[in-house]
Length: 352
Image (cartoon, rainbow, N blue to C red; front, top):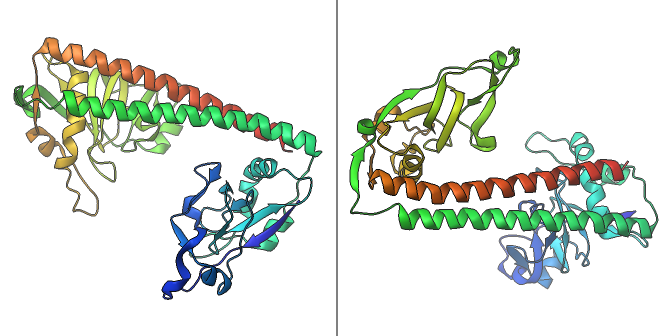
């Protein structure tokens, strides 16, 4: 199906081996995009000739074989790689795009066959042993074209999502920092609380889990799991008190639970809870104790944070603007997730 080619690194102490015209990729640079063009670092002709690096033709599948095993991209220019690759040069009548999608279905096999004490690594021999079924070149092209169309949709959705996030951030900086607004301490406008210890064992024992448990994580909106009952009901603000995500603020509405690494704010009725969450998102990082091994933003520090806010009518008007942006962002995130699920389904069905 393909020729497996390793990579290499010229002597880093020899300056004439570097900063040439030959692209030189590392595993951290591939996998995020289907195609790669320019690498962070380059090597010279002399560096190529005096190392085990190999010049790979355009259309090679750059396959990471170390640490991030199984990640891959297609090069759009001749290039080289470091030794963390077992790149695939497709043979005659083999579509490189077909191989690109096929290898994604084999990532679990590649990881399973990897070994190493410092980091996972898979050898060229193990890559060569991977058994695959190959249809005709015509069928390969059709499969690759269909999956490419899905990748284009996914890329478009991701671009829209990133643009919306940047737009929201720009509007936040413009609209939420007004020196003429009134200054308030959080302790004067909110009841400050905290969640409780909730273990994964407790979550697993639930019989009818309906109500989300929010934890210190930020992925999946901070949801750790679900419980049969709830601790909070209504509009609240939660924030992460401990760990790498300390100071991250969320607006919550409805019935929910919080773990002990989540602080809670019940905002007084004369303030718009959603608007307060927007202002706090701009303020909290300055108050995180980041010099600690475990960063923290504890309840007493949150209580002393000062924020500026306009009158309640202006708060509500600005909230509507941002809620519209959030609704639009959520819609595009769900659309992207749908495309990703469809792609995974097709990968499973088309590559057996």
